[in-house]
Length: 409
Ligand SMILES: *[C@@H]1O[C@H](CO)[C@@H](O)[C@H](O)[C@H]1NC(C)=O
Ligand SMILES: *[C@@H]1O[C@H](CO)[C@@H](O)[C@H](O)[C@H]1NC(C)=O
Ligand SMILES: *[C@@H]1O[C@H](CO)[C@@H](O)[C@H](O)[C@H]1NC(C)=O
Ligand SMILES: *[C@@H]1O[C@H](CO)[C@@H](O)[C@H](O)[C@H]1NC(C)=O
Ligand SMILES: *[C@@H]1O[C@H](CO)[C@@H](O)[C@H](O)[C@H]1NC(C)=O
Ligand SMILES: *[C@@H]1O[C@H](CO)[C@@H](O)[C@H](O)[C@H]1NC(C)=O
Ligand SMILES: *[C@@H]1O[C@H](CO)[C@@H](O)[C@H](O)[C@H]1NC(C)=O
Ligand SMILES: *[C@@H]1O[C@H](CO)[C@@H](O)[C@H](O)[C@H]1NC(C)=O
Ligand SMILES: CC(=O)N[C@H]1CO[C@H](CO)[C@@H](O)[C@@H]1O
Image (cartoon, rainbow, N blue to C red; front, top):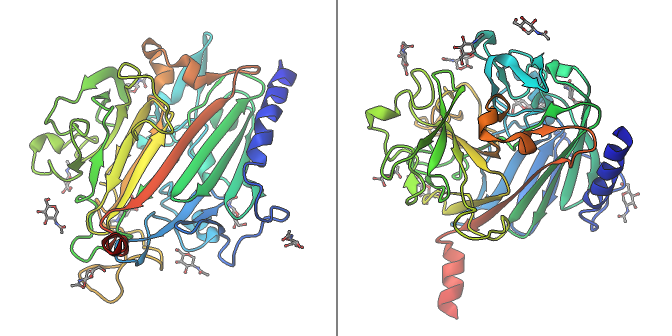
């Protein structure tokens, strides 16, 4: 059984490792800050081994000014030093989001996982030593692509069996591609992964507002969401997002802050929390056959101030969005971000200053067998591997240079 698993994994890993043939992949070398960069003419992305995290996403805004649109730290070393562990840009694992009561059952056997959330009531992002908080290995690196790998062994954080995982990030023109593969080598285990990136499409340099509440979000396939209790544990209910309600981002694009005055928004993201930290389902089979790479994005986020727009294409069946309600100004911006010398805009991430977007599967599906997510979330030796794919496609709306070029034609 184990051999079959390894063989099928080797077959899968090969095309991964040679995903980008250009550039020099002989010796992975970070810059002086410990960051690994991949680039195109339009995008410059930085990565660190801690959590296999994206540290920087840089592109020009509509004025031609370079913006760094993700939260992160200035250097790789600080990711391990920082005490808040905000999961900036990382791959949480082996099971993203929450596990109710830090326990689950597979084939009649109960397992207890590291209870690192809500004062020990549940597991968050794989537990206290989850994948997002470990240094991954750089297993291949070129000018346009980087692959990180991790081996998570039997019993770590309470999960059964060895799991080997690879994440490959590739850039191409205006697109950032993410592919995550994980193979369960020895026992049946839950696996659910994502990319946990905090976005501010103004590079935290908007001189009219420091929040991201004016960013516009559209999730055309997300008419429903996973119901949660007041500590954000799924109740099992799949709830409707009626047209015009606070959680409706499907009927038309809407600013994140559009319903901020609505009293329903208090408690929508847990006890005494105003805003969003919710898992929307992605339902599109019934509309037409789709190709996740080319059919409409599952989510689009844009900011009129910078003109930067992000279209998220993904093969995942759910989508978490968090409006950064727990940020409180205690995280410093990177030197590449913010506004210098303006006391109205201190160089920190304010509450609601970012938007976290996480394509993933139905959260805590392992404790809701009635949702029938087992093929997507439980993997054993010899099974097909867990696969996550996404394409983050950028564009700049109202680019003055582009408009000029058009006028000249
Ligand atoms: C790749 O990098 C190594 C070490 O940095 C260097 O010796 C080698 O010449 C490079 N090869 C190419 C094709 O650039
Ligand atoms: C590393 O990054 C942290 C946080 O971004 C910063 O406070 C610190 O000064 C940096 N250290 C060095 C040596 O650059
Ligand atoms: C899991 O935790 C529960 C509650 O603390 C305990 O009763 C049970 O024995 C534990 N199971 C295992 C397999 O450790
Ligand atoms: C990750 O690697 C960095 C740099 O080598 C090191 O300082 C840090 O202690 C490591 N962190 C963990 C959690 O292993
Ligand atoms: C705000 O930023 C924009 C874009 O960089 C710039 O054009 C404008 O002059 C700035 N306004 C102020 C008041 O600094
Ligand atoms: C934010 O959006 C609202 C509604 O569209 C608009 O009235 C307001 O001027 C915008 N604020 C900023 C600072 O861009
Ligand atoms: C709810 O949050 C507000 C600040 O957002 C705080 O002032 C208040 O004390 C909190 N209430 C409770 C019951 O925790
Ligand atoms: C901000 O949040 C962090 C992390 O939860 C906490 O450690 C810190 O005490 C908070 N600071 C303030 C001023 O509330
Ligand atoms: C047995 C046990 O601890 N049950 C708890 C599981 O988690 C919910 C919250 O989501 C609690 O209400 C239960 O008490």
